Image (tube, rainbow, N blue to C red; front, side, top):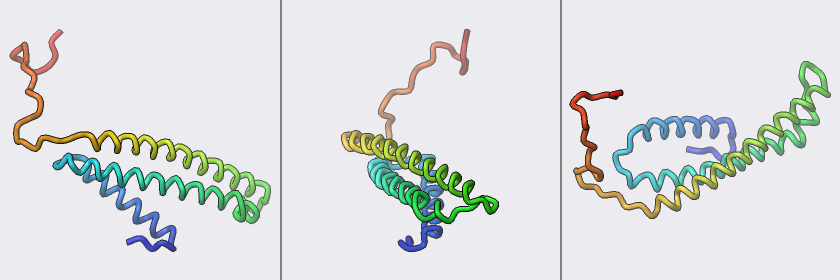
Length: 135
């Protein structure tokens, strides 16, 4: 369960949940679940975008003031600036990912799956008796 006040613990839990989701989506037994999964991923991407911008803002403010690299204040400020830049850039990329997930979610809502045991499309017939490519 999320703690809502321990960023490291919540990040670890999110990582484990996403790892579990990657495992669970290797095969989809119920295509009706795809809609729900896409909706959850869309919301998760938006939350991750927000998180990255907030971490970037931390490096824009107080972290930059106190950052040191090998005791060097200038190098610390430069490193903090670089971290901020990359985090804000990743946040913007995730904004685009979330928008693409939203579009997929909307289109998925239009799909109805036929749950019969027969395949939706007939299997293609082979013109040659051997399985494989012929030249």
